Length: 317
Image 1: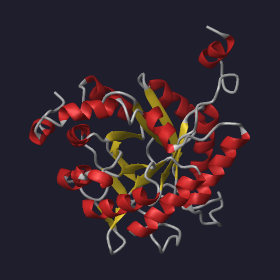
Image 2: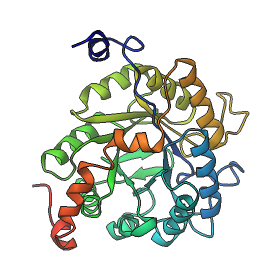
Image 3: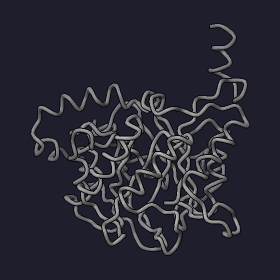
Image 4: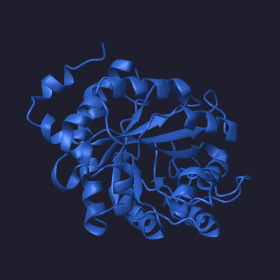
């Protein structure tokens, strides 16, 4: 083992080389409205335009929520289809992750509808919150059965889970899903800090959750509200990745006097990464880092020969 290889395996950054930074931007979410901020994109056209701007600023993943013509959240695949098609027309390599949120509707059929899109509208990833939790606006209900069904449907259709974690027990469920073969390969974890009754936003919490992750894991940190910038910055310094965007925080400053735009939030993180000489991942690099183009796709091709019912009927026992 030469000196550089030894340092990269055994020494803290920057004595070891920083990995490229994946910037995942959550453009819209379920809560922000035009009344709250004019900068939140809600129509497919607005979302696609914002995605392009964020790509050009350094984002490699966009986390997408759909809105209906009334501006309210919707599960309908036809809206996601239009949105993703518009994004792929302009930036075909940008990684598109769709929301499977349980905050507004409990039915599996609604939450999974977007996972059956094909062709140029097929999502690369789908969000998978690994447990139930309470937000200030109400609960997000994610039973083990629902999480399992959504994960199996993603596996069936060759879509990678974006594993969303708000507490330590959710990592435990992720490990159980992996042991059952429901998820496999490289795992991408979004660790979310600072919600009112889940894990707090501090570096002790980051260290704790990261220490629980299984092998072959890649992690990103997000902070809710005013915790967004501290958690993002900590992750950049620690060698993790980041989730940022108006879904989690509509303000640019702590005093909540300046409204943010998604592209300004991405640019700020790129500046921070540049200051510590950490490279920012392109979408192609992010695909390799997350395992999007290798073992997960191969497994999905095998499952493609199974009936949809056979895959969905597989349960955690």
